[in-house]
Structures are given as structure tokens and as C-alpha cells.
Length: 111
Image 1 (cartoon, one colour):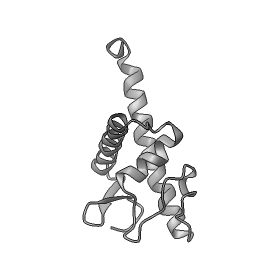
Image 2 (cartoon, rainbow, N blue to C red; image 1 turned 45 degrees about the vertical axis):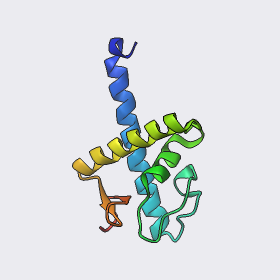
Image 3 (cartoon, one colour; image 1 turned 120 degrees about the horizontal axis):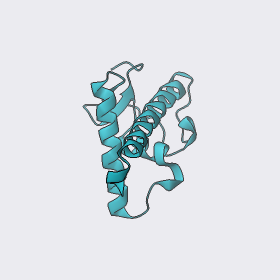
């Protein structure tokens, strides 16, 4: 089915990448405004760590919200897709790794 709709798949992936960028930007904004709690970014899922940035799992919780799968296999797939989106943002210069590579931050946040 996906082979007959490659444009839809690409659009979906790009929307996911954009959602990851928004999650990182919201986390950076919450940090500079003194927030960073579970409500930052509008989806919950953990605050900003003392080391800055968000883990892949925290970004996924913010991006997927209540649609994050409860099944461990599918949740792992969501985390992998989130990691791929973050790596694309890193290649594009929109995100970078912090805390020895364990966390991700918007390029607007200092390394």
C-alpha cells in the first residue's frame, strides 16, 4: 500500500521531522523562560534535564503524545524513527547532541 503512495509517506516523515524540531525549540524556550517541566512543548513527557536538551524518548513522548504505542516493539520503532528525525535535523544544522551525545538540543541552544 505504501508503494502506491510514496509522496504521502515522504510528507509524513517530513512532518515528523518538523515536529521533532518544534519539540526541541519548545524545550529550549521553556529552559530560557525558567520552565522545562512536563508541560513544556505542549505534550508533556518529561522536563529538560540538568544537562540540557531532551533524550530521544522525551522527544518521542512530546511528538507522539497519547499516540505513542504502549506495545514495547512499536514504541521502540517510534523511538528509532525519532532518532532518525533528530539525526536529520543534526545533518541540517538544526539540532545538536549534548551531554556526551545522550541528549538532543535545538541548534539555538548552546552546545
